[in-house]
Amino acid sequence: MIKNIKKLTVKYNDRTVGILAEVEEGKIAFQYDEKWVKNGFSVSPVSLPLNREVYVNRKDTFEGLYGVFHDSLPDGWGELLVSRMLVKQGMNYAELSPLTKLSIVSENGLGGLTYEPSQTEKESVGYNLDALAQQAADVLEDGDINADLDTIYYLGGSSGGARPKVHVREGKEEWIVKFPCRIDSPESGRKELEMNFAAKRCGIDVNECKLFPSKICGGYFGAKRFDRQDGKHLHMISLSSVLETTHRVPNLDYMHLFQVISVICGDMNDLYEAFRRMCFNVFYENKDDHGKNFSFLYDEKRYMYRLSPAYDLTQTPNKPEHEMTVLGNGNPTEEDLIAVSKELNLSRKRCIHILETVKKGEYQ
Image (cartoon, rainbow, N blue to C red; front, side, top):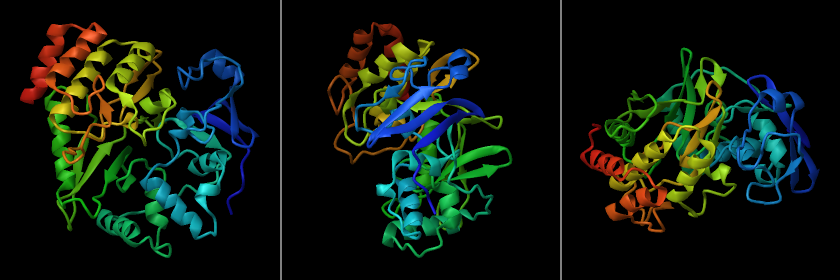
C-alpha cells in the first residue's frame, strides 16, 4: 500500500542533493545539502541558485514543486499507467501528494534526480515489443483496469509524452521505444526514424536512434537515452521547467529558448544549434515544439549546461500552428527566422547559411 510522504531526500548518482519537505498544504520547501553546496551545482539555475536558502515555490503550476522536480514525474502515457495500476489498489493517483508521487517514481524518472524513500519495486522483466504494443493499444482503447499491466508498467510507468512507450535495455544501453496510437499509421515508427535522419543530415545534434523490428507493423522507433551514460544518470531540465511554466498551454516563443541559452549555457554555439532546430521545425512542420521538447544537460566536466540532443522530432502538418511562436508568429516565415538572428545579434551570414542548409536538407 502506498504511504503518504511528507519528506524526501533528493539524490544524484548516490550523492545527496537536498531535501524536499511539505511545509503546509500545497507548499513544498527545498533546501540544498551542505556538502552539495560546496561540491555540486544548481539543479535549476534560474529558480534554485546554489546556496543554503530554503526555497518555497509560491506558484501552483507544478502542484507546489519546482519545475526541475516535476520533470521527474510521469506525463501523459506514464501518468495513465500509474493511475491504472493504483486504481487496482483502490487508490486515486490524482489525490496523491506531489512528494508521494515522486516516491513512486524513485529512481525511474527522466534525468538524473532520484528520490528516497522509494515506494516502487525495481524488477527485471522480459518483454516482447509486439505484445507490449498490443497491451498499450488496449489500455488506450478501453481503459481495462483488469488487464495485465505489470510488465508495461515496469517498463513504461515513468514515461513522459502522450505516445505509449517503454524503456528497455540492450546490454548496457538504455533505449526509449515508442508504440503507435490507434490514429497512427503502421509506418509511424519508420517515419519518425526518417525525420531524425533528416535532422542529422541538416547538421542537428540527434542522439542514436534505430527501428526495432516488429511482426505486426513497420517497426518501432527507438532512441538511445541521452540522460544515461556509462551506468550513471545525467542531470536534465526542460525549458518549461527552467521557466517554471507549463507546456500544456502554448505560451512560449523561440526567443525564450534563446534567452535561456544565453543565461545558463556556457557555449554560445548552442544558440546556433537552437537556431538550426528552429529552422528545421518550421521547414519540416514539426509543430509539436513545446517547452518540454527542449532540454538542457549539465556537463560536470565543463561545469555548465548544454542544450541536449534533439528529440521528439515528428511531422505534425495538421496542427494549425507551432506550439512555440517565432517572434509572436505561430506560422513563421523565412523572414521571421532571419529576423531572429538580428534580434539576438547573431551572425546574419552564418544564420542564412544554416537556414539554406536546412532547406536543402544537407549539412555543409
